[in-house]
Image (tube, rainbow, N blue to C red):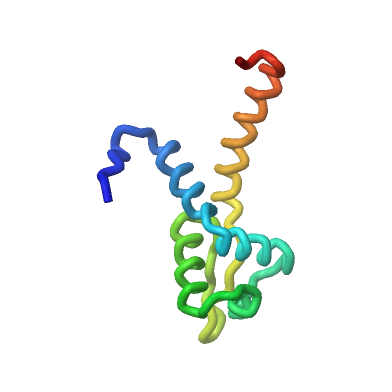
Length: 110
């Protein structure tokens, strides 16, 4: 795998790239949608919602957690997950900036 040269980009650009990569897999989108649907912290039953093995689901949860899109808290032997508002605020801010730009440039593009 090649060198990404992340040092040439701003901290914000690198953070957004990590967030985008984290949501760049359908299983991770499904996990996020499930967390939204249940509207509470989820302990363990995420595996029942996906057609994937438990270790695979755990790896996807780890990627989402490392990116800052979900939080996990220990409750007994289980880890309970919920959305991390801070990560999604960064994504929302990025797309809001794009949307504002596009609204100001309606029909003025090549």
